[in-house]
Image 1 (cartoon, rainbow, N blue to C red):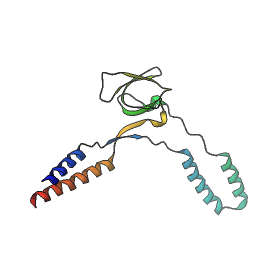
Image 2 (image 1 turned 180 degrees about the vertical axis):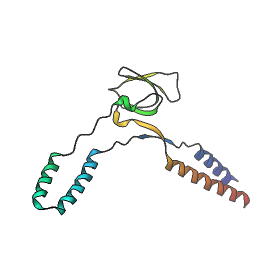
Image 3 (image 1 turned 135 degrees about the vertical axis):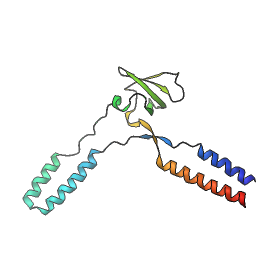
Image 4 (image 1 turned 90 degrees about the vertical axis):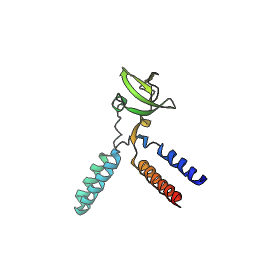
Length: 158
């Protein structure tokens, strides 16, 4: 009986776990795209003659890796979006209300009456994480709950 009680408590705790996580949006890496394009160009050059090979190599060196494109913080942080931001080393889970000039006006996730204001230079743009549904976590929780239910039924029938 005591094992069944612990099992039921475990199932309840797993069912209360959230499938939503804060994930940093991955940016497309232009260097990877350039490397893949250069590999394709190299394969095509190998099939060609030697003089063409030397001119293609020279043109590839001129088109070296380009610096990553900076994404504007105002474009990433739009109203009514649930995000986790890093401001001066401290992490905040907020819902964005609006932009006032260069200041972000938001409120904490479960405290709509509290108003927070951050200047756009204070926000670390590399650590902006959006709240998204995580399918792997949902699958793990579902399988665990089904297994727990099966074990609970088996222990009750035994």
